[in-house]
Amino acid sequence: QLQLVESGGGLVQPGGSLRLSCAASGFTLDLTNIGWFRQAPGKEREGVSCISRRGNTNYADSVKGRFTMSRDNAKKTVYLQMNSLKPEDTAIYYCAVRSPGVLFGLCALSDNVYGYWGQGTQVTVSS
Image (cartoon, rainbow, N blue to C red; front, side):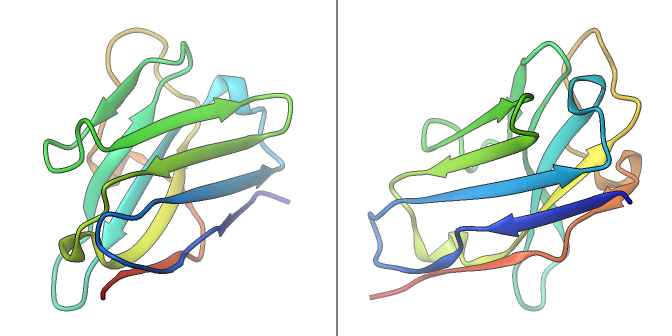
């Protein structure tokens, strides 16, 4: 059974940090690209970051220098370390898998190439 389960969301003050996790089951993770997306109330879903089969990462301009994505293929888990959080980072965060993933070049931040999605985890940045 193909499944993605996000965790690690919560309430944090501006300037704080959170680490999101996405546990994948049923996938051979090193053959996939994995993305993190978010959707704030009243806004469209947007790509936050992604990681390719070779471990290359791609970030939205709005999070560059603050967010770091990593993967542990053995644990079938990907992470999103979020530092210096801002109120505008408030959203539901989703992980998604593109399978098979592209091997060369940057992974895509467009959601239409990802076929598998988790249920999401809420991140709220507020004082």
